[in-house]
Length: 62
Image (cartoon, rainbow, N blue to C red; front, side, top):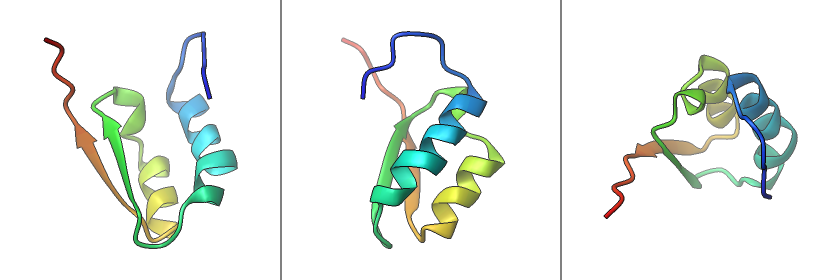
């Protein structure tokens, strides 16, 4: 999926709830960058309800 516009917490939560969660299996790990819209309580609860782990990775550009 390519998104060519602004992105915020509400859009990310909706995408996780409507698309990503349906594809995840219990025990899978979701890696995300450190963007602020990745860090909402709702997003955390969605991943926990799917019994998935999630981590934030700081991306270093060289």
